[in-house]
Image 1 (spheres, helix red, strand yellow):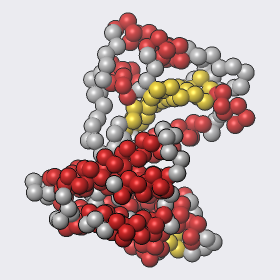
Image 2 (cartoon, helix red, strand yellow; image 1 turned 90 degrees about the vertical axis):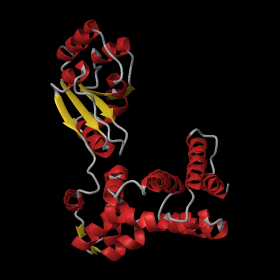
Image 3 (tube, rainbow, N blue to C red; image 1 turned 180 degrees about the vertical axis):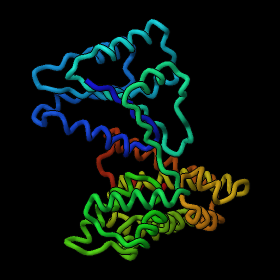
Image 4 (tube, rainbow, N blue to C red; image 1 turned 120 degrees about the vertical axis):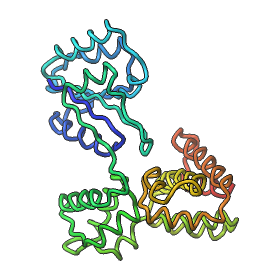
Length: 318
């Protein structure tokens, strides 16, 4: 058996670590040999840790445990957890995952007894790369591109980071699109990135029309975005951007672009553009739009609405 502890705010890297472990499971019995639990209560946690794999070989259990760092286990419970980890079945691998909110600036409390127990095993912090660490982000993009057998020009790497940001999952998705576009042996260029990768400028053109009340033009921009992204992806990306714009609008008079970049997880250049674009935008309008989008997203994900394009459109038109 092996115990792993992955924590941090870069969910993409956590997911990749789990995927590596899943490769060791029998694909024919994956539904029975791979289980995920969300912050199980103490009795259930102990039961999971003492699970006995059936006849399908190795078993992998993922335990989401972020809530454990806001509560306290008593000494007896801590000892029982330690014992269960030390004596669990040799065919059972256990992964504890503490996924922190992205760009929240939070850290796990290393003084907690549960942290000290879990960190004794295969612990790995999966932290996001700050947007101001451009060299580190560029190195990551180059490595991922090479792993995908994708050739990418240096200026294209810089352009991709400025356009997409420091979200590794989004960067990976754009690299996959570039790989398809470059097939069989072309090189990804700055021009290709501008053409196929959704950007802050795309969203600003869209949101500018919304803020001005020019909803017919906003719908045209939305249609353009649909050529690059699924509507729910557009909604999710715009939600992230709106959160950042709200912070920038509220704090731009107090903080420098560099400080705002650290706070929002964006390149300083992008923050400067945002400050200029948002000069005539009302903070209340940004907040109202975010509320509408949140409600639309809930209706879509809860199954109350099945026409995703219309639901997103209606949220913009309110």
